[in-house]
Image (cartoon, rainbow, N blue to C red):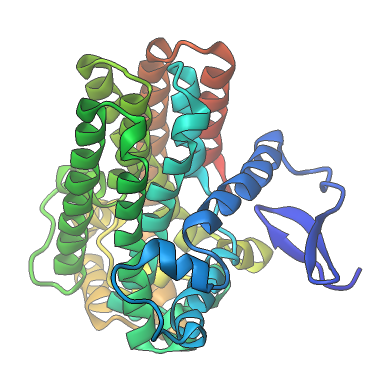
Length: 384
């Protein structure tokens, strides 16, 4: 079939410039089918605020001041084309899905609050674009990173726009919510934007060798801020718009942190485990974290448990930020030698299991509660 491509592991075909759903591949899980279906809804919602083509009408609605002098073509070349190139590569869209499920499970008004699902997804993609620049990465979602395709300046600006565009939504929807709910949601957005930058700063400091993590607890804290921020934002916004009380919001916040940390640990494991077709689905180079000198939970464990010789060798390879496949494989062999993958997988599963137990009594709608549980299982068991 001409024009095939994979999105969320599901088969689609391209005909007359439109994406038409084909039969699902038999081996795909029901959750992946839900992700594909919800992805379409999510992308349609994103397009309301970030269209694929900037029009004169869009400029009238979204810009301040005189609009007559703008060249729409240049904005499409530097904003919509690179951003939609990035969005269309895939991505699971699980954060906005989690937002919708929690909103529904708490009895929230989906119609009124649905559009806010774009917030964690836009920001998440913005962080990936900027993260790839900071890490000097080559691949993201199976293609060259955005700064390699469109230029460093375009990528930085596009990533920054993805951070701030959600603010427009807050003001467009302000009249639909009470002042208390609106202010609380806005404050959560601001705080999590700070948190994700703090987490990224710690991660940068570690892989540049400015300071080294001393123990696993420091890894959990970094990940709680960096990866956990968008999960917390998704869940807390859903709870706020559903009118949940402070106690429920706080408990959901704590649960979402565990989800974020477990997800990141699984991501770190996949980085050194996947090969062949699974590696292509993962969309990043083999041993990418080794090249970047990342101090993952597995690395921290190995540096603690390894012999002096292996510890020095692992540190040397990480500090060199090597692009050499054989060097990266040496580092990965050291991680495997001390069973750090098994250790990390056990920690991730334990965290997700704890999160599943804690979230169940907080969600009222049984159907959405079951869907949340299935999503959490998928995040920890996924192979790409």
